[in-house]
Amino acid sequence: MSSNIELLTKKFEENRNQAEAEPMKKYMKGHFEYLGIKSPLRKELEKQFFKETGILKEPFNKEFVKALWEKEEREYQYTALTYLEKSLNKLKKADFPFMEQLLTRKSWWDTVDAIAPKPVGKIAEKFPEVITETIDDWAVDDNMWLRRAALLFQLKYKGKTNDALLYHYIRQNADSKEFFIQKAIGWALREYSKTNPASVKKFIEAQPLAPLSVREGSKYLD
Image (cartoon, rainbow, N blue to C red):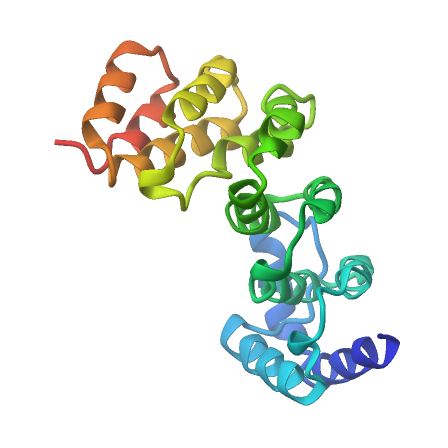
């Protein structure tokens, strides 16, 4: 596994670009360091890396993701997210606590918004008992990112969305003054409105919500 990390590090370091790193860091409010590798190039380097190592043909490697999460520059976490997305069908219920760890470490919208609807959503779809066992608690957790994840985990469910559950989580967070929670409520409603606009319209009309949530959630409604 260490050889994989060394190979990826070598590829990334060879493409470090300090001139690009500074604006990338600024865009993310200075929370993270960057190598300065823009998304198209990073994706090309990832493609090379996955082909050369064959790691995607192996069982899901939690240690690989952990190692990338420990690296300082944010591009490594982005590659971990790419790896997770390409490993969705390999994820098991036993991997769920690890997803919670990733949600609560080095947390910002860029990682949380990839983890919640993809690996978390996938595991919850295959093993719905994790909803009552864990996600219900996330919806009211002190950790704002876990609450955001609870609101967003059904984002890609479309017709399979449990709207009663979604609306329950929204009601639990409707009074939040936190931008990222208000935005998540609006995003979840907007996405579900593509599948069931009448339900979303009825909910928005009946439930007091922050103006931001209403504005975001109503974008595709007549």
